[in-house]
Amino acid sequence: MSTIDPTTALEVLVQLDRELGEIDPDTRAIVALRRAEGDTVSLIDVEMRDNGILEVPADADGLVVVTAEEVSSGEEILGLTQLVSILRDGTEVGIYRVADGEDLRTWRTDEDPDDAADDLRPRDLASNAARRAFGLPSVVEPIPVTDLAARTWLLDVATAALQRFDTDDGPTEVSPHELSQFVDRPPFDGIDTVEDGELPDWHLIHQAAVAGKLELGGHLTVDIEHAAWLDCDGFAQVVDRTLPTTEELLGSLRVTGDDELLAWAIGFLAARNWYQPA
Image (cartoon, rainbow, N blue to C red; front, top):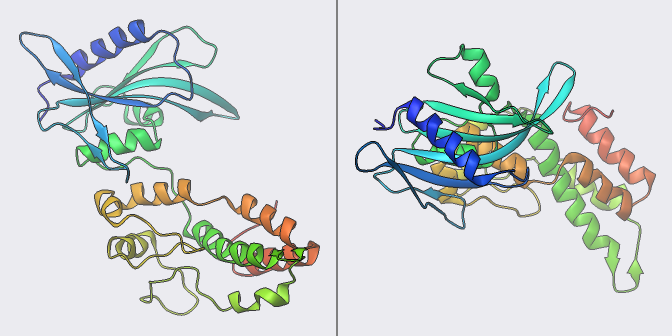
């Protein structure tokens, strides 16, 4: 239980906002809060390990995250810069400005209507690392497993295509025939507990990563300790941010082969409902 109440946490954020001044939207920072003598609150450093695990002092009462995100407001996309405080008991409070705006606005999960506060809770990697440091659930928009399947399969295909394209005699276009071995390859190595033709859910994928059995295409693996530290949603987000996008991978195939290779890959994905071309 945090010894810092939400009102005090908000006051700390407002003071930090004054001290920091204008915040670059690309800035990400995390600092811990600790109740000091009297009614004061001190800021203490935290450490982000190389594998993504956030180490927080045992006596930290909360964490402050400096972040920025784009959020949807009807048909409009708004850029928000935020300072959010995540307390040990899961209460969150935040202050934010809309891009190019000067008005400072606040939100808090202990008083605001659930939907209003939830819409403003940041969903970036830094904020979710702070939540996980206190054992709290990550806040993530759903990520379809079909999207992951498409990207892991494409990563294998694009890696093999690049190896064939870059020859001693110079670049050589790759044909679909040269990549035919990938037609029957499952998208997730290390997971064999699902029926043929069915994709595993994120829970099974997370379990495989924790067990050190998961490869994500192109021999890309996940740090086992980090995977175990994350919850399932947070793990899905990290994987989503780690892998190249479908469009990037298709772009690689466009370089290493002709239109036939690109059409072959898109047709393979579309036939399995893993990708719907725009």
